[in-house]
Amino acid sequence: MEYSSVKICSEEQPVLVKITSGDKPNISNVTIKKWQDIVDIISLTINVPSALIMRLKANYFSVFLRSNSTFNPYKIGENVKLHSGLYCETVVGTKNCLLVPNALKDPLWQEKS
Image 1 (cartoon, rainbow, N blue to C red):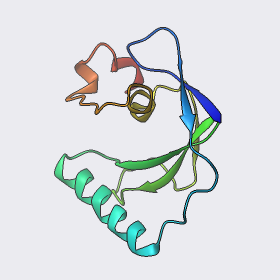
Image 2 (cartoon, rainbow, N blue to C red; image 1 turned 180 degrees about the vertical axis):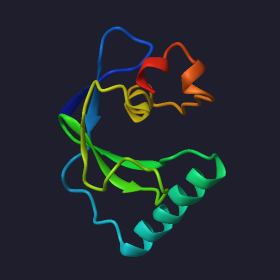
Image 3 (cartoon, rainbow, N blue to C red; image 1 turned 90 degrees about the horizontal axis):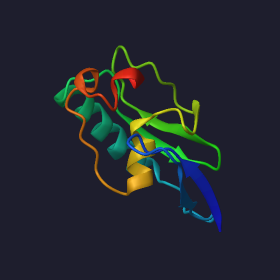
Image 4 (cartoon, helix red, strand yellow; image 1 turned 30 degrees about the vertical axis):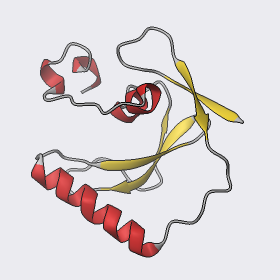
């Protein structure tokens, strides 16, 4: 079994999380289209510049899907190193939902915004 070391925003030490096997089924175009619609709706509904679906690899996250928002800085296939402070890293590390109403006012997230 392969693991990744991820950094949870509120913790000093990183945690290890299992990476599932490489024998994952292909994601159909129909499913990808539905997911694309979801990230676009999320971005519009909560008025954020980007909504993402990420893939966890051994040493990085990869952008699988991105919202088609005008100011979205992410590109599909873009890789982001682990321990970079991404919200998804905390979600994967805690296995919980994450709500950050305003990262600019949250001491845990201010410097990452």
